[in-house]
Image (cartoon, rainbow, N blue to C red; front, side, top):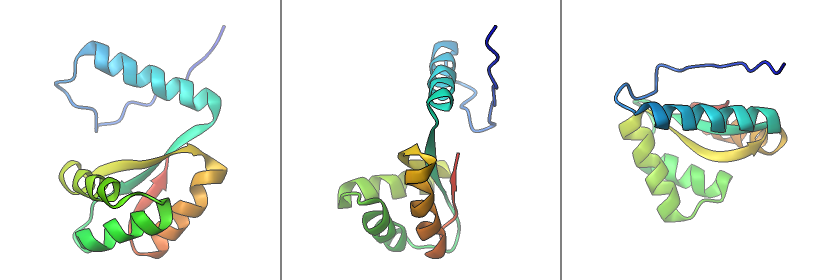
Length: 107
């Protein structure tokens, strides 16, 4: 018998359909099994759009357009997954982003 750890965050849209929710949970469970994580950046009232955009370009190697889109998502949604991968790949990026004064976590 397989046991899965299910974590439901309050960030899920209450209006999301049951199918969308189940699909997201399955993706998270599959990633957990494979050891994959997301690098999440959170919104704050201190960092400018320009600073966050430039940091994403420098640290995550995003294109300018990709970095801008992530910055808008961070601002309007409160957070954004900017990279996906294993912990070894994401931790140095998270550390660099945090050193730039931006709140980031690997989940």
